[in-house]
Length: 243
Ligand SMILES: Nc1ncnc2c1ncn2[C@@H]1O[C@H](COP(=O)(O)OP(=O)(O)OP(=O)(O)O)[C@@H](O)[C@H]1O
Ligand SMILES: [Mg+2]
Image (cartoon, rainbow, N blue to C red; front, top):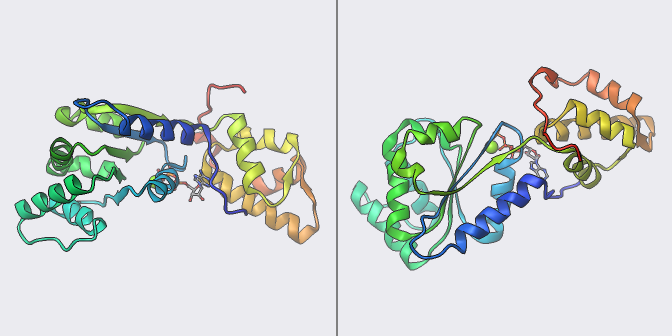
């Protein structure tokens, strides 16, 4: 498998969202939300963007408290956290005012359990004006609506959608070491619509091609690959786009 970052339709939307948040006018709230079903490439996309743009990327964890969250942020800022909660908070604020950096918080679903952690993010945003983007599962949008003060500050909300045909074609063409016939691509589109599943299938197809000296994966070979795969076709939700 080639190590390439593929700019899918979701990724392009995400890039525009980050740009709009950064370029917003003074006084406009600058929080964002990215949400979507598992395996659509959210974490991979934000990790790529954060690395390119020197953003702070935090991965929330189960039972993460406001203090723990602040400690993670301060560590990312290259500082040693003070002891008292209020001191760490002020430390984060002072650092971000001095050197503003966009903050991305992955797996936000964990944070919505403790409203103090969510409120802390809102306070950081209000005091520093740095854009903060929350990333979560399919239910994240609904969950965040319970936190009205934060939800009000969301300038941008984007949902990562299942792939369209064009996405599947670019992913196969850019990632796979072996060619797929058009029929095989079509079959894959009808059976798989998540990055994680696609990556697994491409990797298995590459192995089959290598061990059997096959130059191109056709529909029949792909069916064999998929037969042994654990793709749960019942859960598949398709993109509306027919392109
Ligand atoms: N833009 C991309 N280019 C190349 N490969 C990608 C890309 N996005 C995702 N992948 C591949 O798909 C895998 C799954 O993506 P990722 O973990 O980002 O999904 P996710 O939406 O965050 O899922 P979850 O909701 O389960 O956390 C990645 O580990 C990577 O191998
Ligand atoms: Mg993820």
